[in-house]
Length: 128
Length: 128
DNA sequence: ATATAAATAGGAATCATTCCTGATTATATT
DNA sequence: AATATAATCAGGAATGATTCCTATTTATAT
Ligand SMILES: [Mn+2]
Ligand SMILES: [Mn+2]
Ligand SMILES: [Zn+2]
Ligand SMILES: [Zn+2]
Image (cartoon, rainbow over all chains, first blue to last red; front, side, top):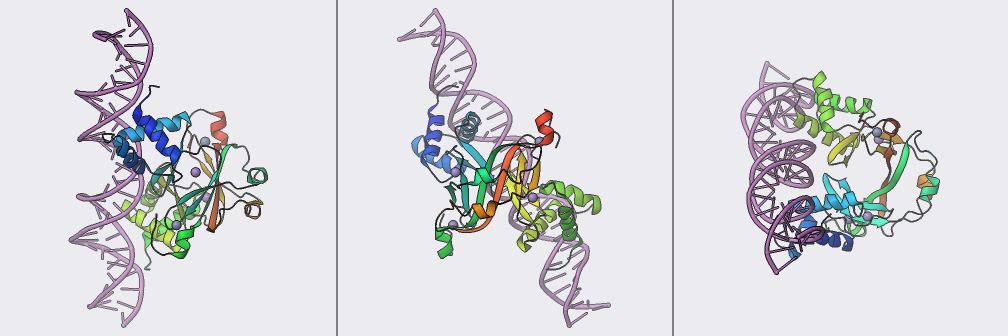
């Protein structure tokens, strides 16, 4: 795989944010550094970085969101503003061995907690 | 909310399957009963049923999938064929109180295990 | 039976994502 | 340093899922 400034920039942006952004958000950020970058290039590089295993993605509310944190972790998701925050549940992987479906090979686990974030539990307007 | 045969049919189809189908799959099923139904009607009724709280939805691999099982449960997802199977992890809700993010109101939890289903671990072709 | 608002069918519009193509560029080789 | 070549790119068209629109139909209250 050949080096490209576009791919490197996409990767750095993803590593530096905790916000689990969409491709479009990444696109805007890249544009502020490389104004001529195209959205297709951002998508292609996000896909390539995911194939390399250095970023992750998941779809949420009809849009793909990307995560530069590839370590095992879980997410808290605010149902109002869609904030997505990492957290590390303790003592889960050990206790989860109970109740797993039979004959399936489990490769990864994600726990998603949905609810209201700190902002949204006190304010009614969308903040994020 | 007025009764409609279309909504009732959508609801019954979702209650009777365990497959976590897409809107399009539901559309095909409804058509076999009400041949003139439109895809827009299926989407609208799926949304209304979700608002009522009698079905759930989540997006997966860029498409919305619907679930007629509104009881708390988790999913095993095959990364090869996208099979989505309910399971009930035991002893999770109690142990999960450790490690939750601060100041967030947790309303629901879902555990997703990804891996290979029984078919896919032995065959290479897509079955589902 | 009639009135009325809710729901529908069919199709257009939208939006995220992927695909395509001719131009550019990183990198290896001379 | 110049050249060759395949990878990558920019820009835009195509796709596919979902939502939106509107004239028509229909459930239901009176
Ligand atoms: Mn994360
Ligand atoms: Mn389910
Ligand atoms: Zn929030
Ligand atoms: Zn499978």
